[in-house]
Image (cartoon, rainbow, N blue to C red; front, side, top):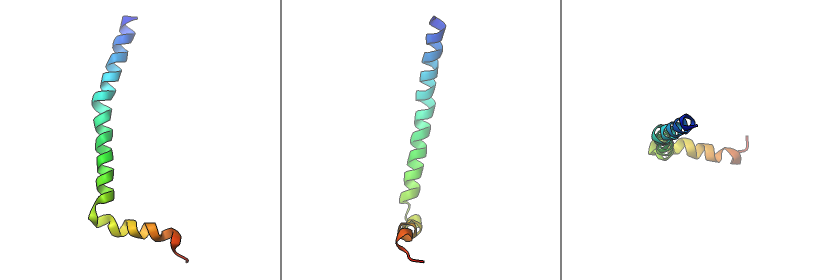
Amino acid sequence: MRAILTVENFASNLVLTMWTPLFVGIFVAIVTYALWPRNKATFDAAAQMPLRED
């Protein structure tokens, strides 16, 4: 039973030390991409798509 707890603790520590910073980095990259001034025209055009009459 002690080995199961050790593996469980190892898995928990692995998730906290590897995956959390990875997902925070991905989130920051997505927000940076969305707020980058060069992408403003693309996002403005996409926002107007539902309002256009083709």
